[in-house]
Image (cartoon, rainbow, N blue to C red):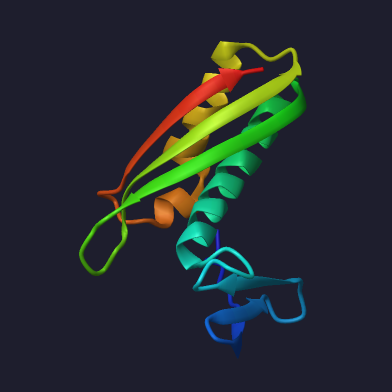
Length: 136
């Protein structure tokens, strides 16, 4: 399989507000002050949750689960000293669906975290990733 190169363009708007995305594609706003939009570190949490959530939705569909609700609460612990990177992440999955049981949900989440989620696998290998599950 050939390697894929992704690229984005980011433009400063004002203060610590930037706008960008893939050239010619949809754009998003990132605000370093977390005022007009999520900042870079919150955006990283959102990216990890969205990546894993996408995996879980696809895996559950292959398990013949009709997903009715999927919500992920993501949190991260950051170092006190610079660089203030994440040292651990926690993803709390809330799922509801027809044909969904705990075993299927746990399997989908495990596959996402350990095998498929490219965002999580792009992070430093020493970042501890934990998760929880609530079936609704």
